[in-house]
Length: 593
Image 1 (cartoon, rainbow, N blue to C red):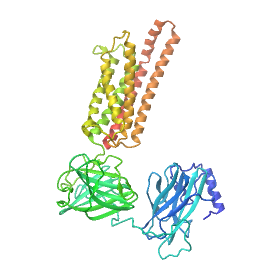
Image 2: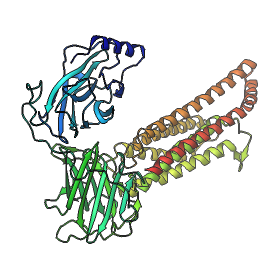
Image 3: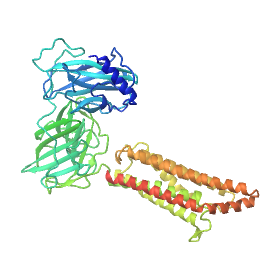
Image 4: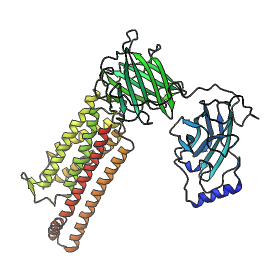
């Protein structure tokens, strides 16, 4: 349907003069009514892209596959509207298939009534599901706006028309498939989200984040409620693949009693399984679960079921009146409900619990305590003690050269204390992952290899310092060079190793916050280093301008350094405070996971 010429001209005028610079992020709510991007140019006339659906009829509650495809395009905007009133509001809601390519938008009063892109990345194909509302019109048509480039786009590309049964359609709509497929209802017997009422009083609950609301789209929730000889279990969380929990005798995967809710083509299959080592779960052919219900809405998967406390006839099923560690995991599935490995560390309770015992409301951690301690100690060593120690040795020799502590120059004693502290902390932190893993980890990429290299350099550095030549010895300059190069190499590798370690599932720091923190620290350290270098250079230049005699230069340099003592002490104080801020921020993040 073509827009009236005047209305279109007015819209282009508004877009141009309002300085709206397009919507690379896909947040195009301003275009909900017109579906016209504010790109300051006219739309193309002959569409290159196609919309198809997997059926021609629908009933309220049905979900229809909608496909948009064609030559490479950057942006898109899809709606469904009343086929008799295409200028009217959006009809129904959508559900995503791939959140990396598409996102839901709310147009008007209808939640999730449109779909758009998430970035300018080129794409050829998009698939979503349209959910027919209870008050749907008799005939619904799909429309799409597609942006190939910033100034090359098509508006309201007409798609197929789908009709409710017994509604006569004049012709078979363009691009609609002629085959009528059977549809499945999105909502099963579960009509609303779970809630946390009764947690800690009548039922045992696990929530992540702690005390989150199960009705929230970001809350992982698991509850157990004993009812005579059985336990009623509820599980929900943001996942379009699968959710699973397992009962375990330890905090390692393997030999566990697992329960999975698996999304198979928008129908949820609930099954028991046995976990053997780190292999994929072995689904049971016989299901010991009763009263199974499920719900899949807006990317949140929910399922509930009942099982007997004791199941002696079912191999692999644990008794629910004993204490176990409890795992809660989520992941992706492929066609046919095939399960893939969870992409992040499962939530694991901090202790063993009896779900039929005293009701509790607990959280858990996606990062084991030993791994948390490993990360925190390494951050303290290589972000705090090493950095301050290097600054002191590099810039505070002249400032503290006449101050002594225990018979040695103060700068040297402070530097040595900080470096020995680094060696101690690093050594303690180094052994923690080996204690946790019980050996070498094959899942951590380059992180353990670089970590071992850093540990070797950390041990080598003080050993080399123990053989330091005297100040005026011929080999002192060679020692200074080796000492500096070894320490600098260790610091660079340590920062790289920490960058790699923060992205490992076992630590599971909030992304991209962790990366920004490390980048901020590196920038902070470099800026302080550069500031002090510039200050030292200015002092040297000042002396060179005052005196020409070499002895006088050194004497004047000592005097100039003394003049700069206050400046350096202020900078050091600010630097230490900044490092403490970065340390507190990191420790706070570690404590939350």
